[in-house]
Length: 358
Image (tube, one colour):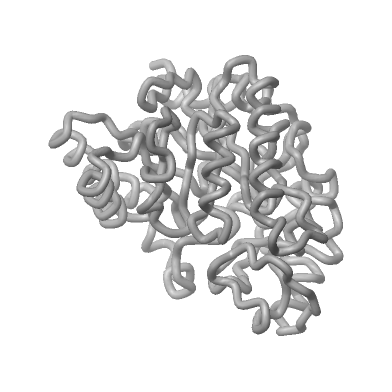
């Protein structure tokens, strides 16, 4: 069996691989366009994408909006007609203006999580952009479908299902993470597929489900497709590519990481985060505070006067290669990365591996 295309509304994606968004500034136009050129979906992370390091609060939202719009236009130009998505977290204080920027820039898809994007259809009314919420349970998918159908007479164009082995900030509690064997992605995927298939039949609409979190190779992809997934989301593998927008030091941290180096921390924004342990992380775990000034408050859940450090500044430092003052978000399987390759080679290998196991 040959790997099937991913169909989202009127979009046909030849290779059913969605490159997951990685912020801050790890997946921008260069990486997203490279993935799109190879037939997948390239995704730009919108969080703090603009030159906001020394900006005033009044400038923050517009700087990010302009930078996102410019990045989408650049990615579309480089992608040779490929599909470009943008990830916009509901938890961002500039959520609304980022959605505006995504629409104005011509993004094909908006992926939205870190909270349920209950108001997203209202912000994109009259456009053809595809809306893809991120959920971690069938219950969340059902709540969102019912809300959208009741309020906007529409359903999501697809769902991304993020499992407990994903990278970065996680939509699971610390207690759940201590027993992650009880929350396999396969179980959540089947639950969401059954839920949306039932809703889809009721309203005569096919709603693809795209799992992510811990998917590393073609064998994993084939397993997900056999369980009812229409495609998969992968992020970690794309860090170790020449086209990834992060600094070489960031990529090398993945190559050098051992399994025991990957740990869970308490993020300042009250969420668990999966990172590679380094000296900075050790200081964070010890409770050492890093003084900072926050002129903009990028996340709704952040309380700048109380948190020990600024997560945005730390992640910007890391993306720029300054790991003495930053840390690297990773997926559970990042330690399996052993070399820097190209997006073209990676995509070809993933497709060939998947075909072997289908």
